[in-house]
Image (cartoon, rainbow, N blue to C red; front, side, top):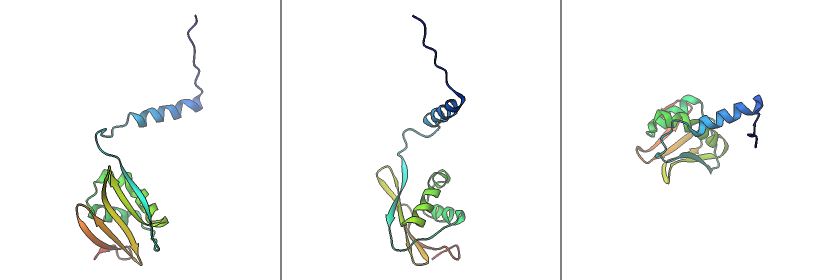
Length: 122
């Protein structure tokens, strides 16, 4: 019986390589997954990257969490006006737009209000 030869085209090799690198990634397998959930709200806001970094740092998120979740948080607040970030089963923070302000309630740092127009906390 002859061995089966598999010929992979160049178009298929790159996606398979990227998928294998993603699966083998360097994330801590014991760490619970973190994700952003969109919540409905009447008001929405478009934050820039600096705003997202400021509010996530104030809410005690790590630099890696800001990189991993920041874009999703920004998009959630622009689309739905409110969001929550969960790490595993724990809600780490809730963000809600109220007029020109962004209210944040964080498990580790309490509650605060951010004014995107001035870049300051109240």
